[in-house]
Image 1 (cartoon, protein in one colour):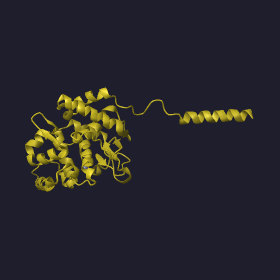
Image 2: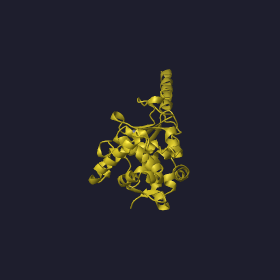
Image 3: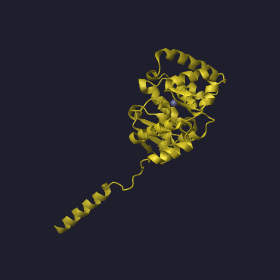
Image 4: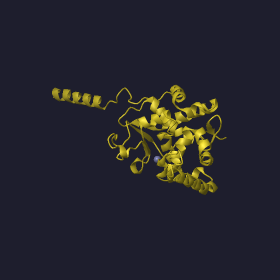
Amino acid sequence: MIYLIILAILFLTIIYFIKKPKAVAESAPVVAESYRDILLKEVDYYEQLPEDEQALFEKRIHLFLSEKKITGVDVEADEHTKVLVAASAVIPAFAFDDYNYPMIREVLLYSDTFDDSFLHPNREMKQDRISGMVGSGPLSQVVMLSKPDLISGFQSKKRHHNVGIHEFTHLLDKTDGIVDGVPEHLMEKKNIDPWLSEMHKEVRKIRAGASDISPYALTNDAEFLAVASEYFFVAPSEFKKKHPELLTYLQKIFKQEVSEEGIEPVD
Ligand SMILES: [Zn+2]
């Protein structure tokens, strides 16, 4: 009998240790004080904002980080990367008070570009590289991003690329239910046709090799909006100079204006 009791105690002890949660959290929450340093160093958009707007931006970063899960699939979701994910989300939505992407709950980070199964990095098959994607079906509440591509989007302004801003622009486009390059909830009806005609005019220029907007914008209207928006937020002065007509519509869609000082929400 005594053996049975000892055996039972041993069994329960083992179960306890197996089930006990790990003392060290794998992904510690980002401390509010560290937002500012990372933003100042890495995010030009934040750096050029006036001080009061910077404080609002930090609050929005905090809101995003406190409500959304950011998970590294095969790579660490460190503090620095989390802040960059949040900045990508806040930048295009900054003029929309307290908007926090209710349609998503999680952002997944990958160590490289990935394939369309979202399961493993895709180092060999370079022709099918995916740097970022808004999930669909069972993954409709998820955004997937390649961590190195997310980081490089904030480092190289020359290429006008920022995959984080690209994917979150798709989500803003989706607020009317369809990702189609026309975020109807963010536009006045009278601007929709002129926006599409301006877009298609630029599409012809890209085809003719007469535009500096990435040819990826030729994929469809939704990609045009996302690609043009990356450029608009990454290099606003250059975008204003080279694409004044498109600028008019993007300023209206995002309720942000490009000035001598930079870009910021319109009051
Ligand atoms: Zn896209």
